[in-house]
Every structure is written in structure tokens, then in C-alpha cells.
Image 1: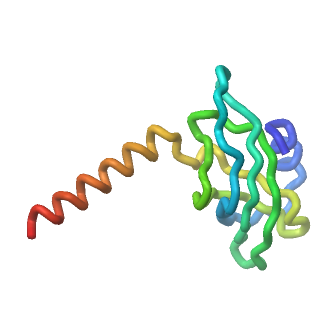
Image 2: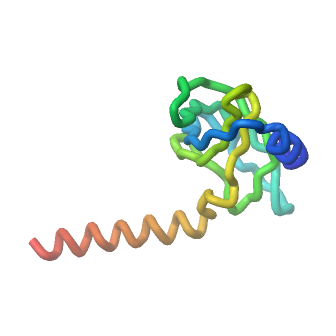
Length: 116
């Protein structure tokens, strides 16, 4: 599902359920001069109050939000039809935000070691 598919799918989600999707496999980011590219992912989806399920997901992704294996993404799933799912891209940190958070965590860890 791409951007248009996400829009159409979102309109058809009649009983939305929030959840998380863990990326089991993700296509690598290749050299691209644009701002987005096609991404294929294999996900384990865990909607709140529903059984987890696996699914393949294909979409257009902005390069600065390119996902990685093991990452957990926020999703909205249709309770009546779990194949209708939307990744909540606006809630997914950019690569720059992830790098900043990782650097802060590393500094915090080093400060904790220095205090001992």
C-alpha cells in the first residue's frame, strides 16, 4: 500500500484499533536522489485487544524516516478487517531524531559510568 493506498485504507477503517508493528525484515535504503522511495517490510502487528498477526507491507517512505529491522512502528488497524492497516508515519521519529536520542542515551550512560 502506498500513500494513496494509505489514504483509501484509512477512509475504510471503520473500527480503528491502535497497535504496534515490529519490523522483521525491511528492504534496504538504496541511493536515491529523491525524497522518498518504495519500501517493503515484513511486520508482526500487535493491535491492542486483538491477536497478533504477520503481514507484508509495501509503501512509499520518506528517506528521513526510513525504517530499520527491529524497529517498532505505531499503527492503526481495522478491528473488522485487520488487512486494513495504516502506519502512523507522523509519530515515527526521523533518522536525525533517532541519532540525537541515541547520542543522548550514550552520553547519559557515560556520565553514569563516570560517577562510579
